[in-house]
Amino acid sequence: MSNKLLRGTFILTLGTYVSRILGMIYLIPFAAMVGTTGGGLFQTGYAQYTIFLSIATAGFPAAISKFVSKYNSMGDYQTSRRMFKSGIVVMLATGFIAFALLYALAPMLAISALADENLNGVTVEDAIFVIRMVSIALIVVPLMSLIRGFFQGHQSMGPTAVSQVVEQLVRIVFLLTSTYLILNVLNGDLVLAVGYATFAAFVGAIGGLLVLLVYWIRRKHSLLAMQTEHVESEPIPIRIMFKEVFRYAGPFVFVGLAIPIYNYIDTNTFNRAMLSVGNEKSYTLDMYTVLLLYVPKLVMIPVSLATAFGLTLIPTITESFTSNNRALLHKQINQTLQIIMFLVLPAVVGLSVLAGPAYNIFYAGTSEEIGKHILMWYAPIALLFSLFTVNAAILQGINKQKLAVISLVIGLIVKLALNSTFIQLFEGVGSILATAAGYSVSLLYGFAMIKRHAGFSFKLLIKRSVLIIMLSIFMGLAVSVSQSVLSIFINYTDGRMQSVIVGGCSVILGAAIYLYLAYRSHLLEKLLGNKLNRFFPKAKSVE
Image (tube, rainbow, N blue to C red; front, side, top):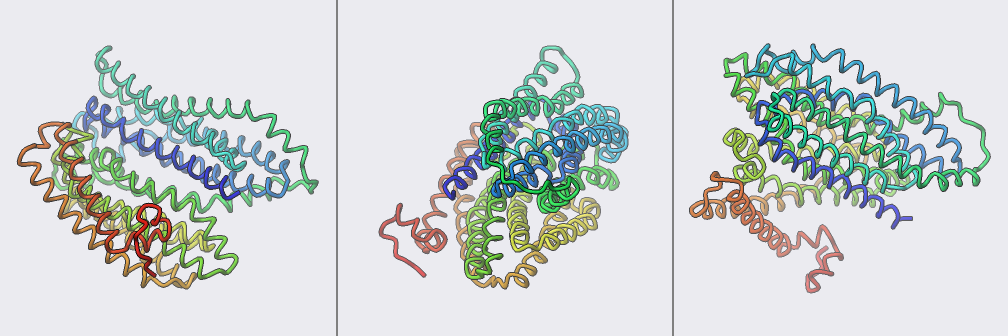
């Protein structure tokens, strides 16, 4: 069973990573075609869609997965099938309601986001068009997510992973093809191109849904065959079933909403705050696009690692907490937080130091100076994102979901309170500082609650973190020197290939130095234990 679980987790994580990487790479040609003006318009539409999608699904697909898994393990396949059928009706209803609301509210949301009738050529009418184009996807995506949850409840991760990748591929192919054809073949305008780029979310969802239907047809007989092994039980009333599902859904909702809500706050406050202190419209729109669309894509890769950890952490910590095995619980928390620090901290340090080449590799020619400056400040936020995700997962694992919600709400209040003032004072960096303050407050509260309710001591974590910080600083200095030396011969601002050479060589050197120092200081062995002996047989055991 454990091998099946590990295999399923690996397949799901791999599918998520491939999907995220594709979602990052497509921005290279897209940014080259639409620039910051088109990117800002795209972000305005997509930010609204993301929030409405989160509300429409409300953690329901993940909750269905947990519900189906529970009742299948009891042999009550009939109940899980009834819940699935009811869930389809709910997701179709909430999806259509979310679509209708977003379509109807588009004028109000467009005015709120742009904060001006004409922001450097982007009008309110343009934003309304783009928001309404992307809203159509809400009819399909919640249903698709529910079917994925049903398959996952049967311990079948393949359909979810494959449909995720196919959905992303179809979306990207349609997005890039339609954008290119409209701009370069049909000589259409930028607004139409961006409208179809957001409509690609609907096309991609249809592709993902078709994949799931193929899986359903292939496995229909085996799924139906399970019902012949059905354990007789009293039919559970629909009301009771939904009450249980919504109880499961709560934790999944707010963790998934954290990053979109922070982003949404910026979407609706950034332009207004920038324009209120006299910034030019073109400069404001450039920074808005870089801050909210282009740069976040670069820092989401290390964050997705933490998300994968968080999702797999909940059941293991729940088991240890429920069985009152405090020693194992503390070990799991300690090891997870240390590995997050070990992997994410050097990544964000390196990304911050190499902000210039890293941004140029993806977005050469698109507001390079602004991009470099924003990425340098934004990269460290990835560590806060990651720690918050794991922090919330731990609170859920020890059955303190309400405290995790409080943690998020406190952080959002801090973000809202500081955001406009900080943006007026420090422009794009102000938004980043407000986000950092929000997540820091959430983390302090969350860790205090973990200490109180799980009896967890942070002494070892702090001790190891100090060592990881020292190694990361040394690595950062080495990377900085490497970049400076290479820049004597190669100017990364000359083009994408030059940026690849400077960034690539510096990353390889930095990674080699960091891993070597981690090995020599026995940090690797302390984190990975006996597993390290496969690679370094002579490594001495350290308690």
